[in-house]
Length: 367
Image (tube, rainbow, N blue to C red):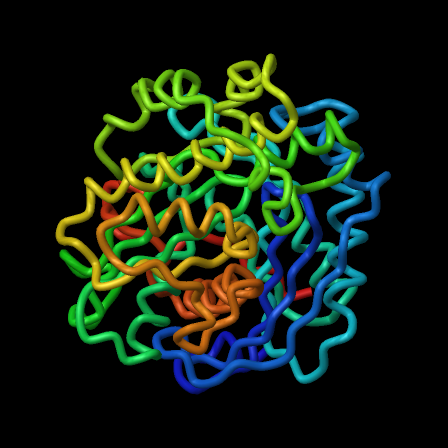
């Protein structure tokens, strides 16, 4: 049995994340005991090929059928490639690829067989992180907040800070690092802020045949359509109290709101919608954080970062400013959560997903 299942001691955990932006598989090593971050290790990235991305896109929003099976094959093959190059790994955290997320009705679906990966790699794999949370009434998302709490303590934050992940969907974690345990009352509040990169990426692919607005170049040339922005902010989701979460396609009608606009104006308006959703989300924070630390692909878009800085009442910085890796933070999070699952520790709580009690979700496959 791997020493990662032991109750004490530091382990080298490898986390893998394939997000709703459908860009590829991030992989990162974290040294941790399941409570503290003890060191950061190697990282890797395996991009999805255009043909693979098309298979995944065709399966989005589906719960079963041949499209889902085809997507699972792509996810498993890409993860095997991404994870094989790492050595000395005690345990792997495998998130899989989210295809559909409706926790209040049908549940949540992440494809990819962690047991098959454990057998192929010869290393214990923790997977299916979200199902237990949903079964206990939680949203099943976001799951990175417990790691954000560890990050805030690791970088020496002295008071509340916020982590903003801008992937396909945006999510915010308000952290008070003065509270020692992430599941304790007052330590965390987390929820999805609204769509982030997904609508803009879809627009770029549909209109221009490119996967994203590199450097915000197209949005920079456009003008925000305020009428569309107002319709977007009228969505009932923004008034709902957190915790709350979204599926990638919950705001798919945003593309329709900008359908008559030029490419540049449409890109500018979708970018503004992402920033406006974050501004609305900040109103739910228990107190104003000292700073918002941005992770995920959205932080590479200077137009979006400028809009965020203009709309928020506290400093907005990429997480690199405090010594973290914004491209790998989610992969590191699932490395961290894998160790917690293997050691019987909580991975979500009422303040992060709305689950009825703290729960440690996940299946451990020894291989």
